[in-house]
Image (cartoon, rainbow, N blue to C red):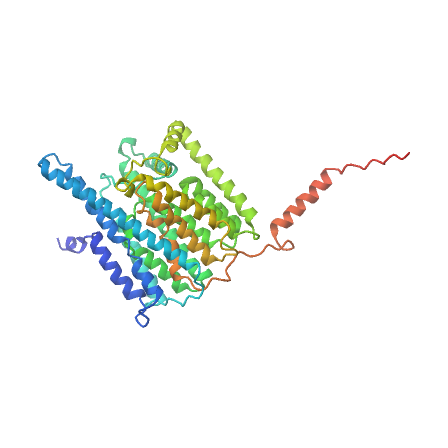
Length: 458
């Protein structure tokens, strides 16, 4: 009985974690000697979107209670009206908060001098805190009853769903578990995948801080703040929320190698689709410094990713059905009436089209402005593009904070990166140029040149 007392602990609910995390973040990162500072404001407004999630949670609770048949019709009607009202207010809050961070990203394009944001805890303490927070997040992810399904927030890419199902089938086959009892296996496979993705983001943030920011403490601080923000805990089990962020973080880490960045962005574009909107921005970043290599690798990786998705769908006999559904889906087609939960169910959907047109104008602008651009501007513009998707995306637009949260952290903690640009390609030392020369020389030896015929004269 005594052992059960020490093991009987309850994880904090969403509201408790919101207050606790913001208090810890202020204690760790707020510069009390310079209260009026942009980075202090960034730290506080990083939690700006959390009340919107709490409102959505309350709205879903009321709507779920309204479905109970034993309630009186008047009570059910009141719960439904109240839930729909809070649902609209919650999404309106998320869109307003996204609008603030969108403007903040655009403002960051003109900021070069950035004083160092020194945490109030040293590197060893931050490393210990990050490790313990990650362990707590693992507990949050796995401390659920495997037989009770966890509701998915938003639609996930079909490729990720099929990969998880395939991994669960392999585990079942190796362990001899019957297919009818694979609910628990899918639960653990999903949790293993999502925690691996979170760990990849943490490692990427730490390495970017250590190598590109030349400040390991800043990298560890970004990892701690990523684990502290309520958005990570709220959507800890949502694989499709974390999946794109992993590739974006590591593309930033590999910015000096356009081929690697192109491969990473191409792979995620073929599986999650929305990162393809970042292609004009990153291609402009590499203009004159490897844009052809970036584009080639991007297209090859995206084609490979799409081909694998098509192969999986053909194997399950679902290719035609999913193509038809994708073409008729109103979530990403702003000229159609949305049918999924979002702010556009409360506001008139016709206003979604001009918002989409303005967003596409932004995409076109990022292809050539600013020129030239440095790493800090790429991070800020990438975050602005991903945030901009929230305004018109009809499937719970505003809740996909984990898509761009690591980019916001990089923007907040970055030093002066005005000199961080892709290296110029020197034809004399570049390995690809040397290989192309060897190939041209070999072809010249294998393919004889046509002989010039003498010109006849009268």
